[in-house]
Amino acid sequence: MSSEGHVDRSSGYLWAGSYAASKSYKVYERAYLKFDATALQGKTITSATFKAKNSVASGCGTAESGILAQRVTADWSPATISWPNRPADTTQGAAVARDPQPCVDGNQPPTNTTWEWNVTSIVQAWVSGAPNYGFLLRETDETQSAPMFERGFLSSRTDQGSDALPTLTVTYSDVASSPTPAAPLAKEPDADPPTVVEVTPTVEAESMPSDSTISMRFSEPVASGSISVSDYPGLNRIPGQASMNADNTILTFTPSQPLNGNIPRSC
Image 1 (cartoon, one colour):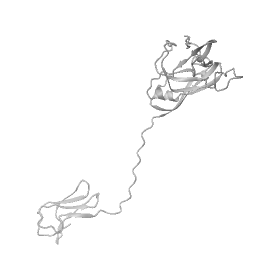
Image 2 (cartoon, one colour):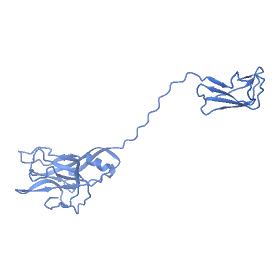
Image 3 (cartoon, rainbow, N blue to C red):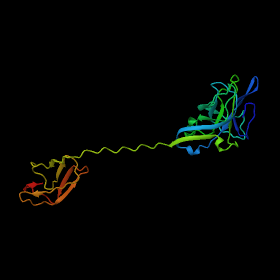
Image 4 (tube, one colour):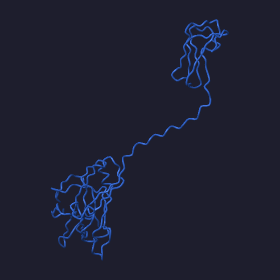
């Protein structure tokens, strides 16, 4: 569409830039387009390139002249868009492209060339939650003092075949998963066996109740343990129940019947 009110809804071109309506007045042109990026949701964008074939060109401009691709930030419809109600846009993440070849003899711009815009930031914004209202193409300098610079790119309505269509090529990866925790380092084998560090009651204990339990505390947890209590010197085994505490460091013997306090015991 143009600043003088013309909207091209049917031709095979995307017009962007400016042309001279008179010696003292320029008309600006902008093109709006959309791509369906639904399949990219949840992806990490590595690169995104918009390509369009330039078929018609007028004006060489300056070294700074080019066509800017900007993200559109408000909804619009091809059926109702016009210059007065053109949708809002942002320069954040905007990309500029210029003629791939210089003008011939300083006044004849090249045609039948493919232009490329790096629109990675624009596509990443869509994927990150910004509404996808497409983007626009316009001249980098829309002031009356800037030289004329008009480019006509083939649109999706072109009859020049699929190779001439505008394209958006995106390289992406799935969202990185959480790193797998490293396996714990293997411990060195324990070469020292557990030892008994305490026996209750002690050997020297006297006047202990006949139903006293006997316990042994080990220097480290043990996988299993057993205890055998006998009278001495007869070495008759005393019946009872052995149990290990929760951290496997204390083994306790509970006799099934009262002990005879006059007979020594051995474990």
